[in-house]
Length: 327
Ligand SMILES: CC(C)(COP(=O)(O)OP(=O)(O)OC[C@H]1O[C@@H](n2cnc3c(N)ncnc32)[C@H](O)[C@@H]1OP(=O)(O)O)[C@@H](O)C(=O)NCCC(=O)NCCS
Image 1 (cartoon, protein in one colour):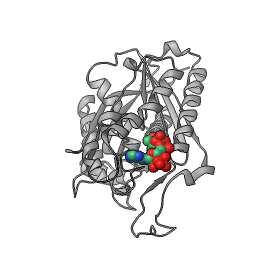
Image 2: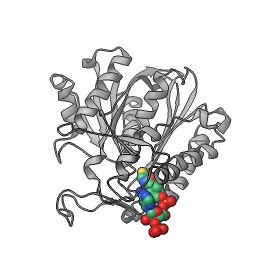
Image 3: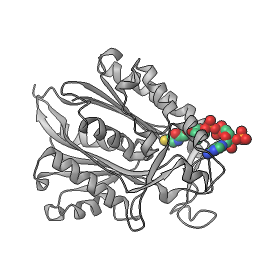
Image 4: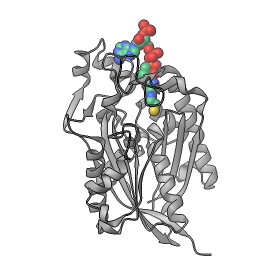
């Protein structure tokens, strides 16, 4: 029986110009480069300029993916944007991105997916379902954030962790192809929202200090949950594909903390040379982190055709998910 599979035919990313180093942060809160680097692996992160929005980063990452794929952008059937930091409450950032890409005349659907740091895995899985069902031929999936806009710059437990950026993949349906998305796996557990959330919003009203709210996190607890969830997702993905960990060539994990990444790599018995790491330069870019890291290892030629690539992420909600791709 014939089947459709989603193949990644192009990747792209985009980062704001401005770098915020650990030394810069040490002048803002009681911390040090040594503390931040030893606990998280982060040296610096990028911060969007005033007037630079999530949709700007997303659109540029999208353009780069379209260019890498070498296709006519008007042939895209669907745009998905995973973000926790949309330009506005509405319309969706995906609608704004569609327009910024000059594609509104196509009337293609465009919508956002919200699963915080696991947002890209969720959007990728949604795109995969559309392609497998035969509803879409080409889908642009973007993860983009301006996390800096929801940071309490006086909270040393969170302001050191996050950064801004965007990454994208262009998927194309292929009939009976060997390459592409082999499986995706998504999970949520809404019972522990107090461990990682924003302290204000829309229906609940503004934060105590006013405004849309900032990230509040019990870092220690989140750390433990993240390690557990990412490890179990890796196991689930191996089992679903009936492969052993030795058959995975690359790990592209969510970039929250180098120690979480090392834990996941250990579960796969994966040497760190086979793990995409950008956390040192980007910090945690939430929904953008996996596609940003993927774009880096694709563009510098480290990932080769035919290799198996495992992507896995964990975020607020809690939400977590993975995907296995044959490149
Ligand atoms: C945030 C994180 C780096 C903190 O590291 P940790 O080893 O767990 O540190 P703790 O939170 O236990 O705090 C230990 C001490 O360091 C202090 N501390 C916290 N942030 C600090 C900073 N930036 N600089 C210096 N000291 C800091 C704390 O106040 C605490 O001091 P105390 O012992 O006097 O109370 C770590 O918990 C983490 O990475 N968690 C996961 C976060 C994450 O991935 N979130 C997103 C998931 S998508």
